[in-house]
Image 1 (spheres, rainbow, N blue to C red):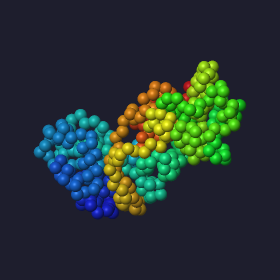
Image 2: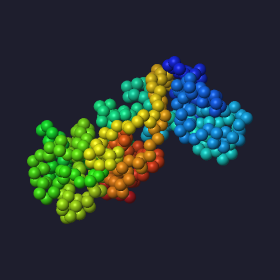
Image 3: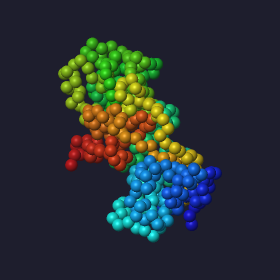
Image 4: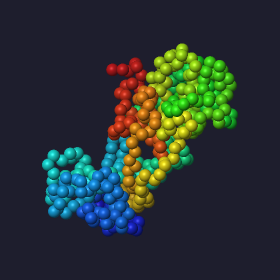
Amino acid sequence: MATQAIMENDLCEVCQRLSLEALLSSEGFKHISDPELLKSSGFKCRLWSLVYESISSVTSLQSLDPWRTASNSPRFTILRGLERENFGLDHILVFCGFVGVTFEGQKNKDIAPLGTYLVGRLDISAVEEDPAAKFVKRRQIPRDPGSDDSMFMVSQLVDECINTHPRCRAPQTTILPTRILDVGSTFEDTIFLLISEDRKARYAAFSYCWGGQQAVVATEDSWVAMTQGITLSLLPKTIQDAVAVTQKLGLQYLWVDALCIKQDSEEDWATESSKMADIYGNATLTIAATGGSNCNSGCFIKASGDTTHTLSKISLLLPDLSTGTISICTESIKDPMREPLNRRAWALQERLLSPRLLVYSSGTVSWQCQTKVQPAGIGSARLPDFFFRGTSQLP
C-alpha cells in the first residue's frame, strides 16, 4: 500500500498523494498533465509549478517530437527519484509520456519508464537531523559558503569521506613539503612559515588564481622573517579564507605556493615544482577557490542572485512509516567552465593530483573525491585509485 503525503496547503489533489515510496518505485509518481493543464496548474500548485519550471528550463514542450507525433493521446508526467551510487537519493527526474504510446529506440530504458522522455530535473534534500535524511542523502547547500551552516556541512563531508568511502585512502601522516604554513598557532592574527625538516603531519593544500602580483610572498630576502611570523590580515583575502577553513577543519598546516616557494629563485621553483605530485597527492585535502579571478576575491563568494526556486518543508510519510520533511527545488544550472580557476590549465594537475577537493565556487561549496565523482564535466575525470595508494602498490 502506497504511503500518502501529509502536505502543506497550495498543493493540487494529486500532489497531496506524493510519497517517497512512489518516487523510489520503478513506475515513479504519475501525474496526468497535458501542456496547458501543466502550465495552468503551476499557478495553483506549488510543487507542480517547480515541475513546470524544470521542464521549461530544459526545453519547450512543443519542441519535443513525441509531443507532436502523439498529440491525440492524453499526456502524463512522471516524477522518479534518482539514486546514484555513493550519492544516494539526491535528484528527482521528470519524464513526459502518453497513455498507450511507446516510442521506438527509446534511450535510457533503465532510468526512463517505458514510453517516456526525460525532460527535467529537480533537486531533493533533507536536513541531517530529519528522519528523511536516511532516504534522501542530499543536503541543502547554504547560499553563503562562508556561513557556519556551510562549514558544518563541509565538516560532515570530510568526516564521511574519511570514515565511510571505500575507494578513498584514509589521510596519511606524511612528510611535510619543504616549507609549509603553520596556521594552528594560538597567537592572534599571526601564522608562521615552517621549515619542515622532514617533519610528519597531515596538511591541506590550496589551489587558487593569483590574478596579478601579491604583496606578501616568499623570497630569498623575506622567507627567514616569515618564519618569525606573518600577519594574517596583510595577506590577500583568498588566502585568509583558506587559513580559516584549514583551522576549522582541525588541520595545523596549509601549503600555499606564493608563501612556500621562493618566488625570486629559479632554482627553488625548479626544485619545488617537481614535487607537485607529492605536495597535492599527500595532502589530506585541497581547498580550491574556483570562483575568484584573483587573490583578493576570497573563497566565500555569495550567489549573485536567486537562481533556484525552492519548496521547503514538505512533510510526508517515509517508507519506514515515520514522518519526515524534505525540500524540493529547481536545479541550479551553472557552467563550471565559467569559474576562473577552471579555465587555468595549470590548475588541472592540482585537481587531478588531489585525493580530496573542497571546491568553493560562486555561491556554493562542493566535494570531489575518488568515491564521489561528478557524473560529467569538471570533476568527472579522476586518476586511478592506485595512484593515491602509493607507488609501492602500482599494478
